[in-house]
Image 1 (cartoon, rainbow, N blue to C red):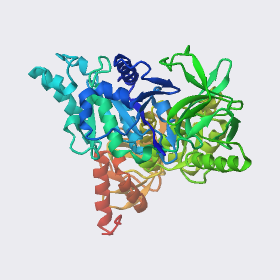
Image 2: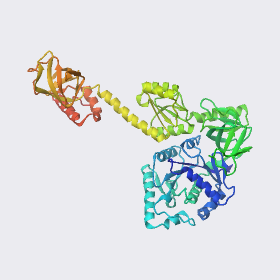
Image 3: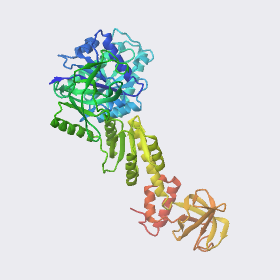
Image 4: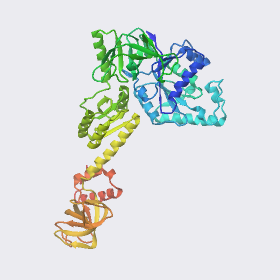
Length: 595
């Protein structure tokens, strides 16, 4: 057993400086004079502890004894797609994360989403409060460390800086997280460390590396223990088509050793892929991972923790985020590892559940897991979770779910494509798909959709009920005395429809509205403020009704109880008339509408 390097991922809102931060860390290593001190592997930059010690200098004095952590692996492909691919059974592949926040802009949608995903995966993180160099009046003395530099700033600039820092502290507080500047943290298990820095100038980078190393050494000893010589365990970071090589997989190994010619078992949606490793590739020393012109070198074996590009025939069905395992290739080993990886996949992918719930889609298994976590936290049930673009089969499932429960008849997607023919099908069938590149927005839009749907359903239900209405028979507008009686009415409050029962102000039942006419045109509903002709059977003007009478809708008791439940959809005046009607009814029956 041995300690592996700490796997660090960088997350945060777009344009807040994730890529710049990793570039600056690499640049710091180079400027520290360590030739070959940084090694590029697929998907990660490997920074040995000796290099960190050189960059941090006297800051390393905080370690009373020996530094045992062998270094850091920073993930070079920052962003949500990469981060949500970083998974292994029981949580995230990353040991710790850096949440990058622009100190001048504060929280943005992806900041909030990153925090939610980190919390869902139980990944500890520290906060890089980036772009301090843009604070008005900021000066940077390259010969001093961060805290001395801050203390040397003028009073006004310090005030601006502290104000921005505590805006961040307050924002974390709103989320139930206690945060503090790293040098003021009393308990790292209870407080988030904020490290002010500038990815542009490099100020604060030594402090960031120090905090990462110190936290890993103090709290992560057990999880960093690996079997160096055991079979490899890892996760696919990206699936790529490489000229001359075909489909390849960029993989992060977090345990064991992988060798050329070994058998690789890879998790799949329905069944695992079993392939033979033809080649292992690493970029040439100090080449840039994201540069498509990067040159690679063949290696015979790769040791955890590292990143490596795997070339093997049969990788066409590989999916980012899927688990991989290596073995010598015996039938027994393949069977055992196939069961192991598929058990991991089935924890996330479940296409044919009989449960009532939303349908979810994502492009990677990690993305699907993150979406599942965040929905679970909001107690939103899931009936189906699958990978890839939305298919006609998904639409069929969606229709079935909508018929069972309108609220869950929705597909929620993260980074999911919808083919044109499916878009047309959804439109024609009036179905709902919500998909974004930010999970946070998908969930936010779904919550808004549910609220609107709830209101629509309530209004639909309201339209089946007799609504509260008070109207007056206008003087001088008797068009016919009886069979049927036709009179002019003015709707004082509420609304009345053809067919609604009506009563007098003493509660006496009269009849039903036979029809309504406005400007000699038949109308179904008469709204507040309207004057129109109303015809009524079984009443005679001068007997049961008279000019100047106020009449009310005769609301059935069951309708009254429903109206009370839906009263937020009624106007203030309608609620007042509803109370009047209840008082009229209770003169004859004191418990009418109660309960």
